Image (cartoon, rainbow, N blue to C red; front, side):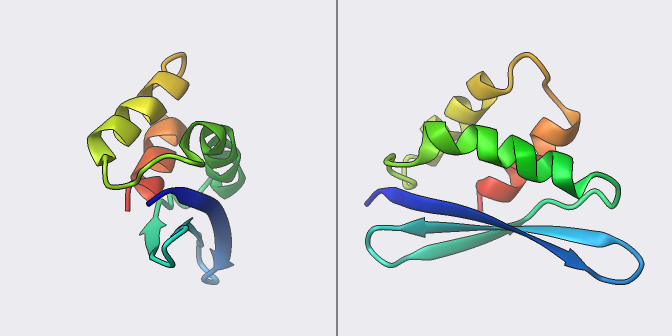
Length: 91
């Protein structure tokens, strides 16, 4: 099984934006995550796009390896938006 696509969706709930993440695989299995902070949805989406290159083509079942791939990809700016982006992807 390999990750084939990662999509993000910003949904306006009226009082705050919600950021959702969809992770698709080559076996037709899809996972969803949520990583809203109420203030910077486009920053989270940008961080997810930056992490995408390290994740496409990898096995999502090796979730601990994927987690560390994402940590390595954001090590210059840990916490904050990077932590929220990782939380949304590791659905």
